[in-house]
Length: 460
Ligand SMILES: [Zn+2]
Ligand SMILES: [Zn+2]
Ligand SMILES: [Zn+2]
Ligand SMILES: [Zn+2]
Ligand SMILES: [Zn+2]
Ligand SMILES: [Zn+2]
Image (cartoon, rainbow, N blue to C red; front, side, top):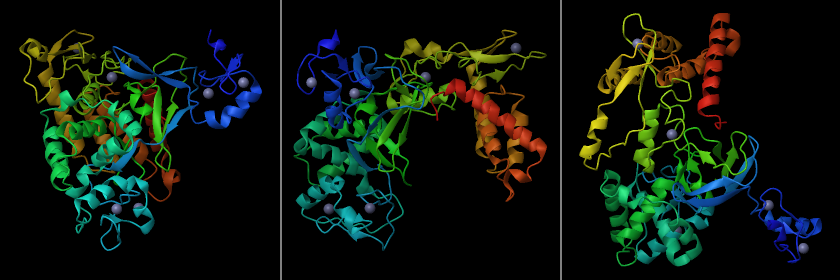
C-alpha cells in the first residue's frame, strides 16, 4: 500500500523505498542514490510512536542485528552539572585557578580563548551582559553556586531565540506534579529559580512554572556524559523517548564530541519497543525500582521486576534458615507501590507493608523486616570492606554464602570485584597467578557472564 507514495525526488509513482528506514519512497534507484546525501541524516530504523500506556516510545521499523547502530544524535542542550566546581562553559573541562581566560563580554572563566567563542555559551553570556555587571569567579576546585542555573538558563534562552528547539524541549517529560514538594524541588526553586530572578535580574522574563519545568526536563531527561571528570549534562531529543526496561534491548554510548549513540544490544525484531536500562542492571530489584521511582518518577513493572526469581537467576534470593532446609526465600512480589517520602501514605495500601518472604522448599515464612535487616547488615559489611584486597572479597563470599544465594546481587558484586583483582595484584599480571587462582578467576568470569546474559543482554 505504501508503495504508492510519491518519489521523494520527482514525485513520480514509486516502486521501492529506503530499505533501512522504510519511510521514504523512490521511483528509481537513480533518484534514491541522488537523495542519499540528504536522506542519510534522517535515515533511522526506528520511529516515535505514542500510546495511552507508554506515552511516547521508539519502535524498530525493521529487524535490527545485535551491535547495529540505531541512531546517533547531537544534544538539544548541554551544560555543566547542577552541582559542579567551576568548569569551562565551552568544553566542560575542570578549571584550575590561575589557568583561566575570561570571556571579554561577560567575565565567565574559560579554559581557553577559543572556548569563549563556543556558541553553547551564548545564553549565559547574553543574560550576563543584560545584567550589566560581569561575573567574577574566584574559588576553584569546589562546587560553585553560580553554576547551578547555567543548564536551565540555556533551556530558557531558547523560548525567545529558537522556538523550534524550545518546543522539542517542552515536549519532553518533566513530572512537575510528582516533583512538587520534594527536597529537590525546594532546592531548585531556591538555587535555580531565585538565582535566575535575582542574579540575572530576570524576574519579569521567566516565571516560576517555566523555570521549574526546565529543571524537571533536565532532571528527568538529562544524561550525565561520562567523557570528562566531572561529567556534564546533555538533553537529547528522540533518545529521550526510548523507554526503560531492566532487561533492555539497546544500550547507549557517546562519541568523543558528545553525541549519543543508541545501539541494538541483542537481535531485535521489527515492531519491538526499543529500551535502555536507566539504572544499573546489576542492582537488586528493590534498589532498581526505588532508584527509578525517586529519580524518574515511575514504577517499573517490566518482565524482570514482575518475576521474583529475576528470570530464574535468584538474584535477590536469601537462604532459608530453617534447620536442614536447603531452600531459598523470595517475596510474593517486588511490585508494591513505592510510597513517596513526600506524600502521606495512603491507608489502603498500608497493609502491603506486611510483606513476607517465603521458602521455595519448606514454605516457611519470614517477615520483610527481618530480611531487610539482614540485607542492611550485609550492605554495611560490604561498604566497610577494604578496597583492592582479594582476601577480603573471599572472606565476604565465604561468610555471606551462609545467608545469600550464590547469584545474589551482593555475591555477584563482590565476585566481579574479585575476578577483576586476580592478576592485577603484581607487576607480573596473569603470569604471576597460581593455577588455582586462575581457575577461580575463570569460574567467576563465567558465572558473571552467564548472569549478564540473562539480566542485561543489551549491555556491551
Ligand atoms: Zn523519482
Ligand atoms: Zn532511509
Ligand atoms: Zn574549554
Ligand atoms: Zn561570555
Ligand atoms: Zn524493571
Ligand atoms: Zn526452607
